[in-house]
Image 1 (spheres, one colour):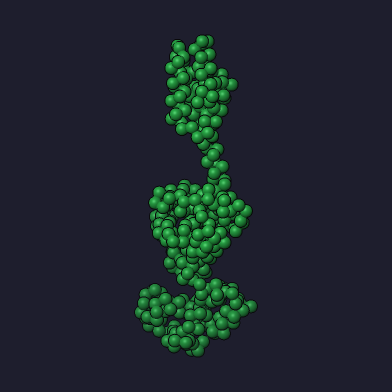
Image 2 (image 1 turned 180 degrees about the vertical axis):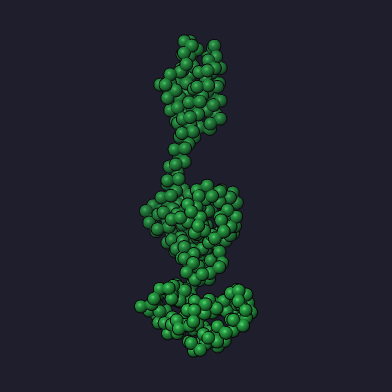
Length: 341
């Protein structure tokens, strides 16, 4: 400590002898000592106590000079801490970008610094604010959620970061409570209209990338399909990527089954919405009518109209499957707004 505070003691002795306050050079030396103390990990309380103890050996006590030197020490100490925090945040952002994009340079070594053991399985939750949220996700909100998760599960078990306008939470695959807690805080702090996509648990760095993409894709599919649920699990939506892998086949299905609805008075949209409501209600027309805000008689009429135009009826098990798949395909392809090739 004598090495760190030698300049501080000399400044106090000169002030006591001459009555002059410390100059800029002396105060800069004190700030530099504060920076060095922070870099060496000296507790701030120990630094201040040592500075005050040294002042007791100087007579007469130069109180004005002491205030200035201790203030300069603290300024340097705090500047060093802020700089370290900025460097840590920059390293964290770079690590998260590399992790979620699959860039593997020294990834495992850097992951340990943030408490992640990439040989294990991890699941990723992706939260998106409402479309009308304006500036997206505030850093303060992200920090509050991260602090809450770390307080419960420890910094070695969760990683929370803002990326591409979304809030991302990486947690061990065996710690389902972490993504559940993450969703709880999103529900509490985000404005209505938020969505959370939950990727499946996968092993290794590549598994984190896969889970992240699944979570983000779940949100996109929810938007395209008009799903109401704010929390979407990739495991529940596996059929949709399968449908999209063979675009030609799904386009053929939509064209063959649903294109006759283009002839309906008022267009195909009310009939498509009716089919979606009926499927979501497990065939219960009364429940479907409540979803649509129409009478049960209107639903019955629309289903009969669909049967006459397409030749398919949701009452027939085989035809129901074909109809439901075609309707899902239409939503995925944004038909009829987007014409099919």
